[in-house]
Image (cartoon, rainbow, N blue to C red; front, top):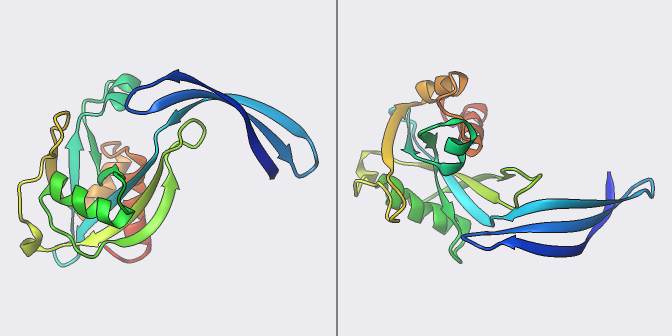
Amino acid sequence: MVKSARVLGEQVLSRGRFDLTRTDIEVVEDDGETRRLSHEVYRHGLAAAALLYDPDRAVVTLVRQFRGGAYLCDGTLATIEACAGMLDGDQPADCVVREALEETGLAIDAPRHAFDAFMSPGGMTEKIACFVARYDASSRVGAGGGVDDDEHIVVLELPFAEALAMIGRGEIADAKTIALLYYARATGLMD
């Protein structure tokens, strides 16, 4: 167990959409042992995601898109994910309302916070506020597909049982999406 930690120094290695730093941290353990860590840290920031679900039809709406990180890892050409986005100075619930409309064309008005999750805490500062949001046929107000120049999003409405099976087949490998789907099953939100 860690008793305390403090940043000793930091060097910016790269500036881009997000910064990459080499950060030196001193960690004091409960037993008094002191360790010094030096790690590259991707300063990603805060985000929000939502699992959009229609329990009356037992379906969820997800998105499929190209992701550079997945491609560089193993050649994956597209990931299937819950809609998500970076907080742009807004609150997480407002972010998922915006992202749901932009990415899926669904207007949601009552996202419910499920949990917060670090995506890769060993080397990224990204923390995602995860929500679930109910929708129905009247919620569709647009085509979706994203609004950013670098987005080409395909909207997928899938039976909930099929989405769960896709995890086992490796077709859904996005951590936030897996967690949200299992959350929906574990809490009885979707059967």
